[in-house]
Image (tube, rainbow, N blue to C red; front, side, top):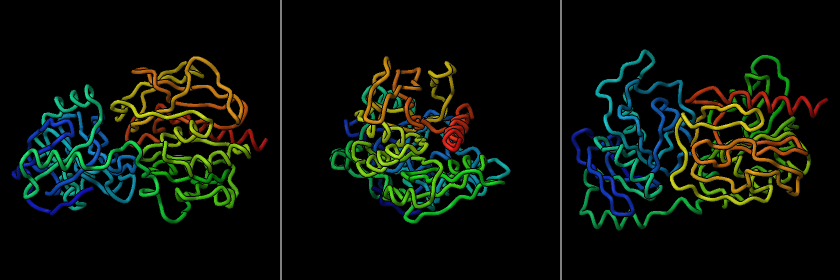
Length: 381
């Protein structure tokens, strides 16, 4: 929820108001105006352009824990979608002059051009500590003429919608199906249900000889199988998985047919629900490109890219029986033991709670796309 005007920033006063009454004052960054969303923090020290354009951040105000943001400017190659999706942006020390051979404009200019209201000069360390202690919560950023008395601003923040119960995937997904062709020889066809997919994800599959048919979030089981898929993929996306009844129904249809299935992030939560598990909201979520996860099937530890505020409520100490056979928790977060992956033992299906496409982020989890290919190879055999 944003209203904005493009104006001179850097000298315009701005105020950030959390729903519990905590207030931070700074200067406008990007567009001048007002915006509302859920306050979350991202621990990545780089990759801000990919973060901004990740549809999973829809209706969230992102606080960057790295103090210096914008050093490399903005280019035209790294966006993960056609627009910036964050509801607002909070930084401590924005770059005065970007410096990178690929830079086309400053981050401040790009935020202003797309109407994204932000604030700079904020003690983001204190703000992050506050969110870790109190949890993610509603927030408003106000600058220019939008700045009123504190009580009025706080009342407006408390009127904004919460993330709990929000059904958002259809708002960010493609409206029309499209195809990402395989790089080189085509080996497989995959139907990818777009719940907020990032551009690098189908590209990673295309690199492995997969022709990817990206389908809207409203796609039916019949739409999925109309493309003749060797495998089905469910993407990342925003919102509360408890509201995603339609994707859950489609996934159950895929599981019933036994087609190789791979889900990431929101797709992991959808698989959890399809198997009969619940989901719950994390206190402040996992966001950034440095989250440690253990693959329990190999014992290896991966540094992974995350962006999620909800998790699957599945037992980590035993194999569970579901309507689709046995399932085990395949990955766990080493920071808090949150479920980071599910694997069916009797059907070709698995999922993870993070971003193996690594845009931006480490490449430790790239093997998961190969694991998906192996499932499709096995099914053919």
